[in-house]
Amino acid sequence: MTTQLMKIGPEWDMRKGCFSASHLSASQLNLALDKWFMTYCVWDAVKRKKIPASIYMKGGAIIGRALQDMNQYNLTINQVMNGR
Image 1 (cartoon, rainbow, N blue to C red):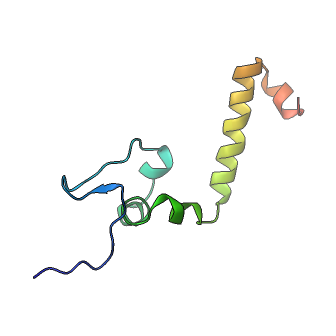
Image 2 (cartoon, helix red, strand yellow):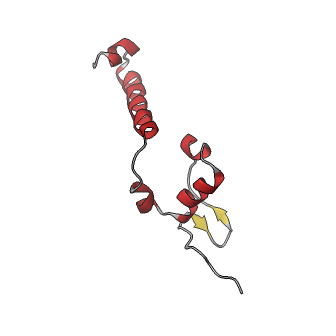
């Protein structure tokens, strides 16, 4: 007889026995396997949204926005750094 110790989240396909998310990000690939499994296979998206943002997440968002602005508005690094 087997017992289920924890409820596995919807990203885990019970029929196939594999992770079925639509994409993987660089931040996911840098996690330890046990933390990745808990975050992406056991917890659902609602639970993940409740995790407080780290300084790395905030920094990545700022840099990502700056790169998008540079591309979209054809800005230089100096223009972005000066708040344009």
